[in-house]
Image (tube, rainbow, N blue to C red):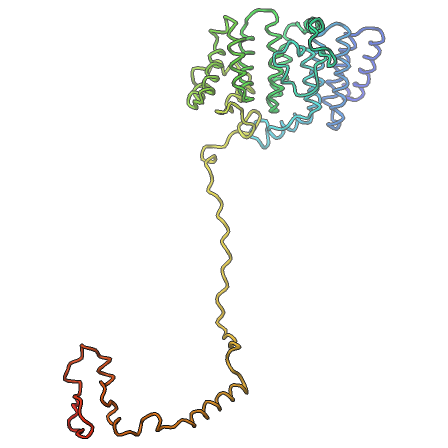
Length: 425
């Protein structure tokens, strides 16, 4: 009434310890549970709240076990495991409201909480009675002796009898296990979720009666097997275990499971979409599934394995079709432009003469020209007057056969040469 949360917690824990000293286990467990609820709602740091909730609920579970209340003991143990996720759950809630459009955001579960949840599941159903006990991810079963001889049938029988004796057969015990299953699905821990589903099925079918709860449990097993990509195991247990219940043959859940298995085995995308269509023939079976499992069905792919990204259970809604189209590849950066060719004059080659060497070469050339004898070149002979001599003139030779014959002067003797006879046309 005074709002003293911490003071009330301390008084209740002290009262529970006093009741344990008087062997009043039920009263002590009740005090521990109330103290744990107060610790979960306190305004202290998250780490401190998680540790306190875990410790107090664990003490309550032990007190209920001392009172031979196995169902309540298992429930408190499961609450203790969930207490280790207080910070993660609150973060998911905030991100789901503010940044995820009202949906939970997928994030990894810490290993300590996962181990505690799996131990709480075995507190309800020993692994020896769980057909999916091999899917447990942490720890080993408390009912299996690692040093025992595998060929010792008597030891195996004794362990099985002990497991049956510790099976929690109280009413609605499977609901506690299903809480763990659905939380594991939200966190994407599908192997552990299948392990929890197998435990819940063992509890539902322990009395030997086939009920609607058993049919939904079978459907949950099939969906989780397909989410793991193990269509062989899903088909095997569907035929060898699920269909052995006559009432399951005519159930809506059986039709849903069969349609999903057949579509994935045959790699038929249209059949898969039809099987999980909310408005199709399986709409009633889908509506009876938990929202986390219903979202998991929507993420099944042709490979059978469920997606863990956008659109997966606990994840943000999938992007619209226009946004999912493949975006064009980014343009490659263009190569840097080449530098323009330089127009500056280039330096002359070393083979050219420069300076004094050039002047010397010029002087030598003029000296050679001075030494030339003009008479040796044939420019003073009388026979060369006219520039042709006895041979065909060069112009006519270069013109070829196409030149008209009138332009070619006739060959004459030198002594009879007359300038008037030259055709000047």
